[in-house]
Image (cartoon, rainbow, N blue to C red; front, side, top):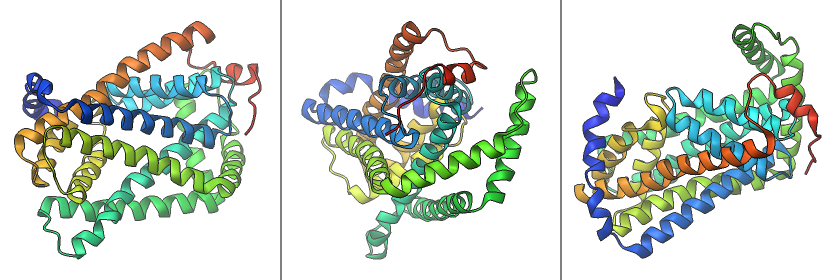
Length: 328
């Protein structure tokens, strides 16, 4: 249903395809470079929280999982499952993989919800902001406070983590009736302590990497806008970017297809970008951030399969124990 609601906006964006040839090539190349470095930051962040020196398994898991997320309904769950299984098959301990993926997601969400905080001084200073973008800013700030509070609770309270682990264990046992999990609480507590200890020493690396991942992705959108000849206020574009990213977290369609196009193009217009520029910039940005990663994920899965074999769910323990993972 959500896809059909967003379908007119998606068709409007896709219909701008012929106008891509009129964009400035130099800005498109910078946009592509920014997105590539943003992805490298995401890989490095995942390696950091996984405490591994491996590259291939992490790159393959991240790209293939992202592709699954973008093509399947409720793809976030399926994509996370693919990442977990590929990491385990690649020799990373199963508990380490689960804890690392969870930590990476939480850090990424905190960074995303923090974006409107950077625009707050501009709003206070009197920069004219449409009511829609202003509400998005306050929503983002509220989400950031909620994420930080939740992270602090899980990092400091054993009881909260035990309750969460109990719920996850029940869900796993419902899904996998043949193999029962009984010790997830103790395993997650031990993994939480390891992640907390390692990030306590290297927290600045995590901050730089998540800032690089989100900041360069936002820079790619700015480059797409500049390629159209538009020169919008970066603060207003940041609000539009942050609001769209939050909307995309709701799994209404695979990878936010249609929803992101409708939201981003509309919010860019609220950010005082001309409608034609907003549509063509949204198309260029989504080609680089949505469609190209799907192709890359398919290619990396083929390479992973040639090295480790096909991904089989339920074999994570065997894959994880097959080869010990070197620690950083």
